[in-house]
Image (cartoon, rainbow, N blue to C red; front, side):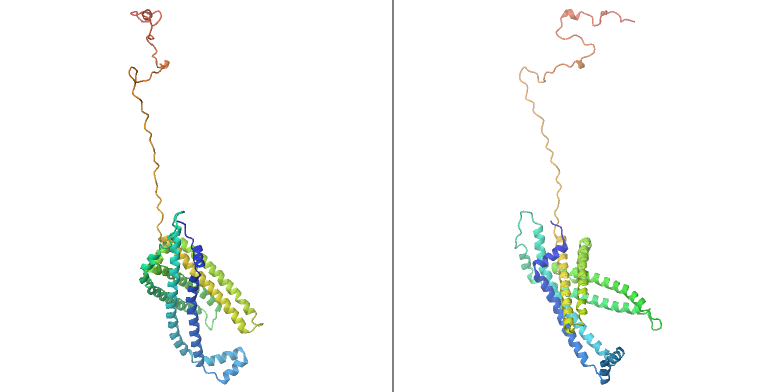
Length: 392
């Protein structure tokens, strides 16, 4: 099986099916458009409740900073309760709309991504000469069609957790600002010290929020793929990140780096219309800035759905059965000894061999075939049998 490459697989999945990106873009931008309309209507109704006196108009026409600030203070005095009432109604409505629309969009996009990832995983597991059956996974989808909408409840639960997390992060940022402002008093102002204290606190809060939100976004993969419940999907996401920590962290790093590059480029480009503000009408400047902002949001959404597609391919690789390597012992073939044919009649079974002179004793008797005359000769010259040895 070919090893996973989450970054490449994520971009390849979106390139093969651009409808996935457009579905994600439609879901996010639908909520964004609805939020802009509701905020605009609420702002319009709020401005209708403000009372502007002729004195305030006169101070505004002076265009002096002190006069303008005095006029705005008089205009907005006593209107904060209406702002709080508007926020109490608007924020829950936008949150509920975000939860429902994003759950529907995430379900549709992840279902398509998971189906494509399963086909790719099965294709990578094939032998070189084997072909993939195009209907291999379709019966499973048909059998589970009655249950394919069940994960919506878990996705809505995850989105509620993400919205609560965002609210907690916002409150934490406000609290960080309050804590940082304690070091600066009207008698002893230290604006720089307060700012330096606020920045680390804001970084800590943002890091915690982004990390937990990242885990919740990965958990949505297990909701759609395995029909996990809300907290069961979080547990599955934690186990998955523990098993594949290196690959998940690598994919997150590269996608985060690309997102950072896109943000820096958009921030740089959006400054160019501001430099032309004195040369072109304000409507043209705002239109150009709006187009750059929308382009950045589109790129950010593309990177987000590509990262999820990369995580899906990594999950499919992690859940697929790994090939088992069998160790086969070498076979040793022992050849039988050669068979000796039986001896023929009148012949000895042992082959005749020439005598070795080294094997003969020192005092050999007589060679065979000698005459009786030779046998009467002494074995040693000057020595006869029966005589004592010399020196005895």
